[in-house]
Length: 364
Image 1 (cartoon, rainbow, N blue to C red):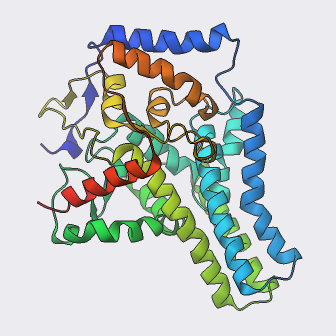
Image 2: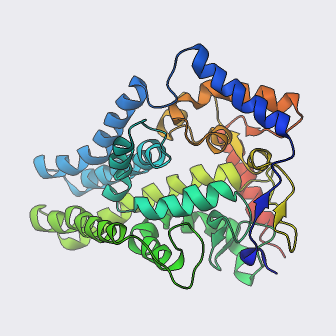
């Protein structure tokens, strides 16, 4: 039986002392300081700033006369802002981590829709499949890139993978463009509402209508309105659209790849035919996830703490603004129980590890 057909489960009867102390230690951090686990003033300020970076250049191109090179820079800034909104606003909100108010989380989660993606599909793909089955091939979709790239030692080898150490970064740049054009619709037809492949796919009508409405709205404001009102040809508008998404694509993919697709982490294979992963879920997260560049405050701010991916996977309902503070707690408890805690001190050392894995997996 292939992994795709297995009903994967974790052995949560193991490492119960570790899991209990980890949770109680993090809980105590917030209780002893009378802190909310959700957004604080710094997070709210960041939210406002990233909305400004994302949409400020858009309005600036209508208000101020600009040469084409300046418009290209505006599109790059929009791409940077778009990725930042996904990291720091939509991601927290869709995990329910931004606010105790579900309406606030829902509205901020719609920031995904404002940048061309879909909040509902993301929650199925990311919250349910990636966070539950991290680095398990056929279960974690982040390991699958069609026939072009190979991200897991368990993935079948194709001849085209021989070149992936060189082609991967070009494919990464196209990720955001594929996301807004194809991926949401593809996933809508692939999974049911609980994230499981199903021959009779059913989704709430409200979610389908919301997706279609926001996709139309996105293409109107990002393409149609500029083609009508900006003093440049439609070809330059499409070029700016491409520049924006290439910028966002390479940023989005690299930030996530450095946490899971590197040499140091594991790619577990569940036992056949039971589907058992013989670790507690929390231990599994630590074995399949890595942090990087934890001392880089600007990067941490911009990517919504996703360079603290270990803490995010263990506590996805805690707002990312708190990850740097709870990281030493997680690290100390993991060390006490001799559980893996993977990290790279710098960004580029993590990139080198990712590239090394791409090279290794480019061979049978």
